[in-house]
Image (cartoon, rainbow, N blue to C red; front, side, top):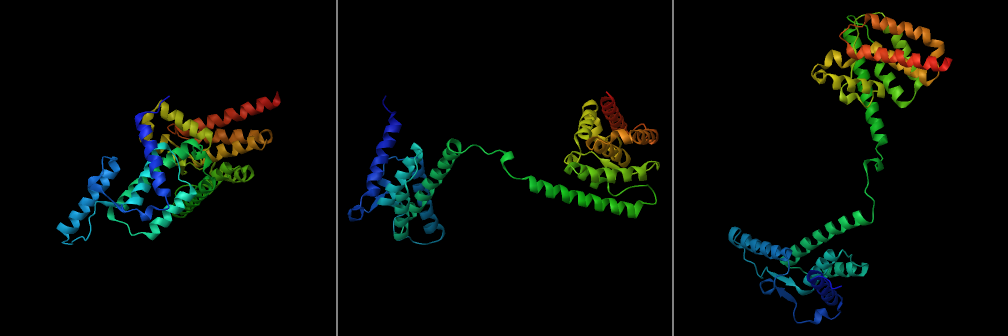
Length: 325
């Protein structure tokens, strides 16, 4: 099968350029430069380089009143051959050998380049590196996904920092408004302990918070904004999503319908830890009593609280019945 004309021309140019760049007698050749005006149509990059060189000459002479001592539209013969060689390699998806790279570097260090040389070199090397990177990444390396990046430590530090700031906020609330409403300062710490899997600490903090918050009527709330999803557990996130599906306007009325009181959150975390630590049976009666009290004092408009309390009771009953059976 014959190669297409374009591919055949590229192959011929490629071998001619390699012959020039590997010839040790190139310095003895009488043709040391290549005039851009005499070149046939090579490609758009070379045409752009010649256009930029002419524009550079215009700026130097017309705008800056500086006279150039040499023509700007000429290339050093070997460098031009190197540029064509690299151009052909980029088309055929071939890489330069170590020998060719080192030889090219030595040549650049030993020569004084023309303006057109620098522009042509920058243009072809930019295209070569871009195409080589695309081919290398698509053919030799698997695509990296977000899961491949080790961001777990960063996420952990960000969550820890957020909890520290929220706890400081609670402490300021307790200092400034403690006489107006009963509140606890460790609700976010308990939430974070549950998130980390430290169920013993979460159970201890949540139980203390329930004992403190059980009977007072006024208490602060914990918002279920999307920004808090990182800290909230699956049950709370699922309830939030269900409420928004049923009534999307709740997003605009976030204060009551889309927040949860400290008492309800503490009861939820306490019961979850009891389930994780298999302590439901011994504490079931006391936990049910606490849930009943919370339901009695919770206003009817607090949708999130009532749904969460019902879910807690249902999970505890299901676990208790399964254990008895």
